Amino acid sequence: MQDNKVYRAHVLVLPYPGQGHINPMLQFSKRLASKGLKVTFAITLFISKSFNVPQLSESVQIETISDGCDEGGFAEAESVHAYLKNMEASGSKTLAEIITKHRSSSNPIGCIVYDPFLYWALDVGKKFGLVGAPFFTQPCAVNYVYYLVHRGLLKLPLMETPVSIPGLPLLELQDMPSFIYVQEQYPAYFEMLLNQFSNSDKADFALVNTFYNLEPEVVDSMSKFFPLILTIGPTIPSFYLDNREENDKDYGLNLYKLDTSICTNWLNTKPERSVVYVSFGSLTCLSNEQMKEIAWGLKQSNFYFLWAIRASEESKLPEQFVEEIGDEGLLVKWSPQLEVLSNKALGCFFSHGGWNSTIEAMSLEVPMVVMPKWTDQPMNAKFVEDIWKVGIRVRVDEEDGVVKREEIENCIREVMEGERGREIRNNSKKWRDLAIESVNEGGTTDKNIDEFVSELMN
Ligand code: UDP
Image 1 (spheres, protein in one colour):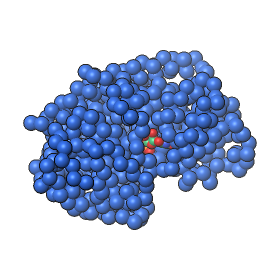
Image 2 (cartoon, helix red, strand yellow; image 1 turned 180 degrees about the vertical axis):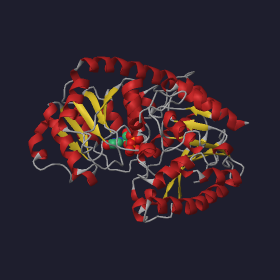
Image 3 (spheres, protein in one colour; image 1 turned 90 degrees about the horizontal axis):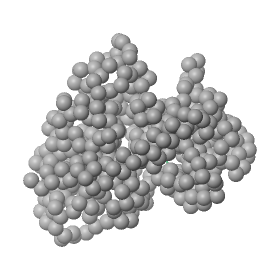
Image 4 (tube, protein in one colour; image 1 turned 30 degrees about the vertical axis):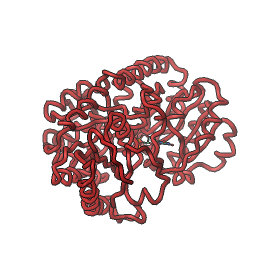
């Protein structure tokens, strides 16, 4: 579509093709558009062919690149390593084609905001003289740890615990990102996370989906080494925070089929603060044993629960469970998570501690029970429990590594009705207020976005 409108600048935004990366980067794109910028949001051909991709607005246009797996996406690749290599080769080429195509238009692309999981995008952008900004979808604390490892300032394997890093609380092994303490768990992913910083000295800014008050010491500490950081979160639709943008209630691009009205109709029949919402995000796969413990732990806790279970996990539910829960529980494949979290019936979010889920719960004042599995989740859980004090982390049985049903039941009870739950609810309120303050006019996030936009004008 020919767009002759004159914009303040044109930004190309490139997320890693996963739900937890698309959501915050798309939301950030909408913010840029609201400040008078044009955004080209690049998704993979596979996503564009396989899912319902809506027309967002005139200012945010979707275009496609290739990840080298146009027919089957990630599932088509032989391994994580193979996928990342395919994506680098085909992605670099097709990204360059998008930039070239717009060069002769009335709005040439002047900046690339890219997911640093795809660090090579910066090299492509720089070849065309673009401003480059990695967009970190994980919190600053986690990025800082990877940065220190990448620079050789934190040596692995860790010989002594707790680990002391200026700007971070003392960390036991299980409080670090999982790749630091489970050696060789997913070497290709770990390499990708360290590579985020392989060319970042050429970047002009680093955007992080967090807000300053959430991690002030970490942001300040990391900024001493890496002076480009702008905290621009929480990137959740405006309706739930500042309500400054019209019609901004959804992220807008779901890689799963939504069960919206089923969830809201069911929640609307439940009393205030009576429901536990359960979701482990878009990627986490649990063992059959762990699913069984969660199912019976929920049942035993005797609260209502709404559980979003992806189709690929459903077969792991124990026999008889679905028959036994009756109206006490609702199982859906994918929920409208923000709508669910903001429903008055919600009392607690039992989550995997994925960063989007965590910052969404904090922004919507929902206390958490966290069962981290891997990557940044253990570190997020440490902050949820000990620093922000907005939830409880479940303890894993040391013998078999499974979180038992009694533990799940006890943690849910504690958050829903215990003394600690009261304290957690008070803290949750405080963090929601601070999240709103940061995105409101003049807040740290708002100012940082303005700074970013005005630098693009120079
Ligand atoms: N989400 C959703 N419905 C669901 C489960 C998750 O809309 O049933 C969204 C959620 O709001 C979040 C994203 O999917 O924005 C998951 O990101 P997160 O970082 O929490 O976890 P990941 O999927 O990356 O492990």
